[in-house]
Picture 1: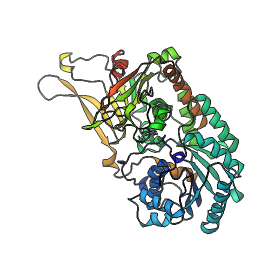
Picture 2: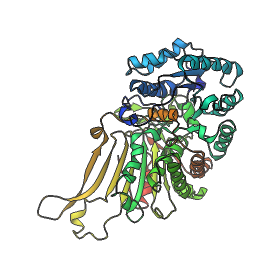
Picture 3: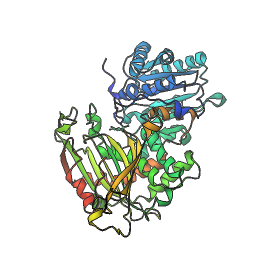
Picture 4: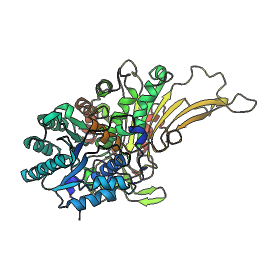
Length: 519
Ligand code: BG6
């Protein structure tokens, strides 16, 4: 059966090559969730089968789910309970007996998302789950529908009394996928609807980058070690780069991507989160308030350019036909669901500035794109050169500035680039690196992010979820760039698939005598 189009959260991409997760190490230390029902709106869609169900299966495999646990799928597609269960089994080929047992309790409700008959059926199924599984009224509602349905479903949940914490301290939480709006205005409007139905502490805005071990490790590196923080500032750091590069094109998501583009799809959320964690001040405590207060403080220090400044400090591009990994691929405008005259960007590079005591004068360069030569997400801190190189220019021509590369994915790790003497009589220096690999130190512990975040929402820990003021501020930062796009102030350059974006992207750094670090 064709999946229900309204159940596709195209905002979330899927990587079939992601390693099968091993959450055991990461979840051992936290409390198991209480019994609960996870209600997935949009259960017949892409996000559910390719991200959520595998993540729940990984939790089941590692006994990180409570005894009383089940999933109720809701979507327009007319599936039976059996069909949904089979989809769940197929979604997690790595899972075994434990998963089959959990899945055997799954239920499915077919119907329009915001209509009474759907909620009548849903409430009946939930009451049955409470009676059979002891889930005691605890609910997590996951909005995995197309974004335009988020507000309607939230309102409908409230209209049908599903928003209020139940008797005996039962909880009702709502998980909202990105994108949270299309700009600051629509984000505020969505927030108003969410807040009319739920309290802020019931709302979990998910950004799967925050569930990635290596993103969290930015905090561990900075605040768990004495040696990095003293140099993590304008006195030592020359510039910061954040790259989110993908080999993939828009796949089957052309229709969605046409309404988004790289700035909305990646920069407003994933990049802003990574940037905030990399540059924020040390939090007093690593908890929901401590971390999020500091992230917001940092985002508030990011300079919001006017449209003219946005024009000067941004590059946008769109992939043309080319070759990725030896395979010929079509251009963006030839992709299914894409307007042949589309002006949607699949690549963005921009220069931001952070006006605070720590970062004033340190440029932050950001780039993201689809159909680049390789998949790589990384943060690079480039340090200043020594004040005086006593070895002479000739002998140090192969010496690059010190760099600290935080590889978020793949090949997760940290690499420090420093100068060393080349053996021989002359005092010749060259750059070498010291490389830490996550996989070598902690085999099998990285995942896409969802399993960790699903677990956190079940135990009610909002530390790795986005607060409303973060969303709003991130939109304020990117809105001038969107405005510059809409006025056609920034040319939309084509780049051949399999290259590092338009040449203007290199020029953005070259004009300041810098260049991109190639992952
Ligand atoms: C999603 C975007 O949020 O993140 C996709 O909508 C993108 O376009 C994906 O491909 C990248 O996620 P990851 O985990 O593969 O880096």
